[in-house]
Amino acid sequence: MKKRKKGMKLLCLASAMAFGLTGCEDKSPLDPGNPVSLTIWHYYNGSQQAAFDSLVEEFNDTVGREKGIYIQSYSQGSVSDLEAAVRDSVAGKVGAEKMPDIFSSYADTAYEVEQAGALADLSDYLEQEDLEKYVDSYIEEGRIAADGTLRIFPTAKSTEIMMINKTDWEPFAEATGVSLEDLETIEGVAATAQIYYEWTDGMTPDVPGDGRAFYGRDAVANYFIIGLQQLGVEIFHVENGEAELNMPKEELHRLWENYYIPMVKGYFAAYGSFRSDDVKTGDLLAYTGSTASAMYFPNQVEQEDSSYAIDYIVMPAPVLRGGENYAVQQGAGMVVSRSDEKHEYASVEFLKWFTEAENNLQFGCVAGYLPVQKDANSVEKLDQIIAEQQLEVAPKTYDCLTTIFREMDNTTLYTNKSFKNGSAARKVLEYNLADRAAEDRASVAAALKEGKSLEEASAPYVTEEAFEEWYNSFCDALKSAVSE
Image 1 (tube, rainbow, N blue to C red):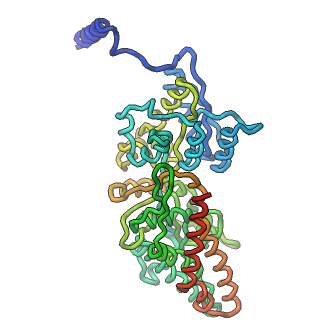
Image 2: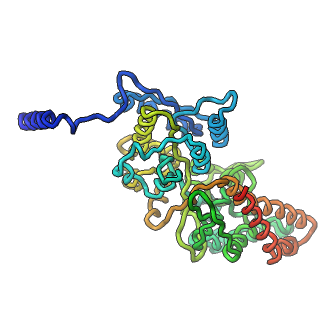
Image 3: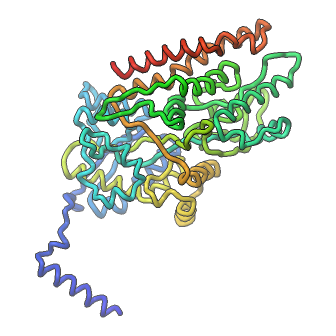
C-alpha cells in the first residue's frame, strides 16, 4: 500500500512538471523567512480578552509561524474608546496612533471608515467557497461598500435572550398562576409584570404603591428595530447608503404601550448601567439582553443588609403577539485597513483561521458569542468542540448558546443596513422614549408619595394625547438625526 501511494505521488509530480507546475503555483505573497507583523485593536476585556489572546498566541505558534504571519493584539478599552481611537487615526490627529491592520468594528463605525476610503476590499482575498461557509446574513451585513463588496469580516455574533431569576420567579409563579409561557410574547411580559407589581405591593398593605418592577431590557433601539420588523415594518429602508424612514403610527403605538406605559407605572424599570445589575440588586426578576450578557447574570442577589444565591432560566427573547419571529443580529466583526497586498492577505488569513469552527466556538464558549460559520451553529458541534478541546464552559453561557442554537431554524436574524448618520439615528431609538419614560416615572413616583393611587398618578402620561405628543416629537427627532 505504501509503495502504491509513493507511486501515485511520483505520477502527480511528473504530471505537474509536464504542465509547467501550473497546479502547484503558490499565489501567497507571504514569506515564512520574512514574516509580516500585524496589529489588531479590539475592545475585549477580562475573560474575553484572555480567550482572544490565547487564540492569537496559538495562531502565532502554528499557522502563523508556518505562513509567515505574526499577530499583536491590543485592547483599546471599551467600544467607545476603540471607536474614538480609530476615528483619530483615520483623521490623522496629532498624537493618534497609526491605523492597525485589523480592528473590531460595528457596522456604523465601519461605514464611516469606509466612506473615508480606509478599508480593504476583503472580496479580493476570498473565493466563493470561502464565503459559502458563513451564515449568509452575516456576510450580507459586511457588504457596506457602495459596490456591494465585502468590508466587514464576520468574527463573532450575538442576538438577544431573556434571563430570569428562577429562585424568586418560582414562588411568584406558584402564588399567582403565571407561567413561563406567558413570557413568550412582549404583551405577556407586560401583563406578568403588572401582576408581579400588584403581588409585591400587596405584601405591604400598609404601604400602598410600593410594588416592585419585574422586567427591564438593554438596548431599547433593538426593541424598536426588531419590534417593528416583527410587525412587518423596516424602520430604516436603506438603498445606496440612503435611509428611508418608516414610522407607522399604529405599530409604534404598540411599542409605546408595551414599553413606555409599563415603565411609567413601575412594572418595568432600568436602574443600573445594565439590567443584569438590576437583577443583582433584586430590583428586577427578568431582562432581555445580549447573549454575551449571560456571563454577567448574577449568582446571587445582594441587598443592603443581606444576600442570597439565585438560580437562572434562559429563554428566547419575547416576540410581539402575532408578529413574525425576528431576532436582532448584532456583534462587531473585524475590518482590515487598506494597505498593501501582503498585509491585507495576511490579515484575511488570520481571520479565516479565527473563524474556523473549533477556534470560533472556543472563543464563543467564553465570550458568549455565536460562531459565524454555518456548520458551527449547532448543539452537537458545540458539544464536540467542548469535548475535544476539554473546555470548561460556564453553565449560563452554555445554556444561552444552546437555547439560541435550538431556535435558529425558526428565527430570522435581522440588522438594518448601514447608512450615513446611522449612529445618530440609533441614539434616537435608544434614548428618546427611554429618557421620557424615566422622567415621567419619577413624576409618578413623586405623586405616589403624596398619597395618590397608581392610576391617579400615571393618568396624565398614558392617554392617547400623550402618545400623539410623543409620536410627533419622536418622528421629528428621527428625521433630524438622519438628515443632519
